[in-house]
Image 1 (tube, rainbow, N blue to C red):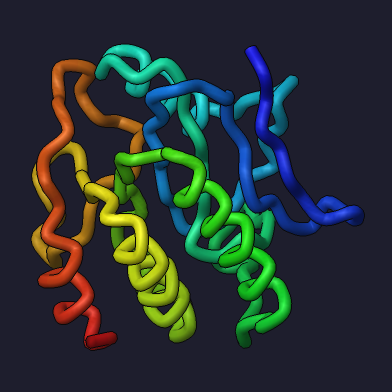
Image 2 (spheres, helix red, strand yellow; image 1 turned 120 degrees about the vertical axis):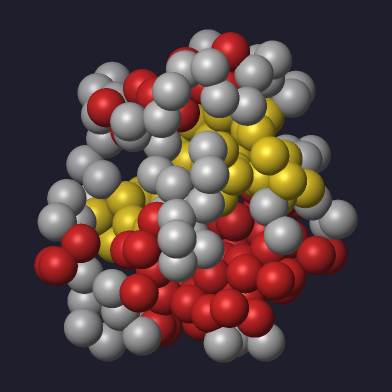
Length: 173
């Protein structure tokens, strides 16, 4: 496979990680892990498996905020605007290059920092330019958030995600 992998020189942030193909499932989480093409973590192994099982020939992991932090409590307290801007540049590239389906997968972590819903809104606005489809997997959390890929039943299918309604729920509209 041909890997797509973009990170900062100091490896403190990851923008893109996945495999190139024709029909790609884009999974959006909150923050980047330490995974690399040679060493996928459990989350990315799950995303890869689900994408294959759902009929996609490739997958791509993006994040609302690209900082590498295996513990979400270690995310920047205040947004690094340059990092966010660079993340949006890579996300725009992914959206522009024919990757048509987005899997929302971040649970309540979106509430971890005040800037995360704002970052997600910027991503949502980008997705509207390309008329992309948003999905979630499994039932939404009681609070309306989409589930994280880990611990989902292998039998689940993608379901339409009303991202406009969700953005209103977050108060970013």
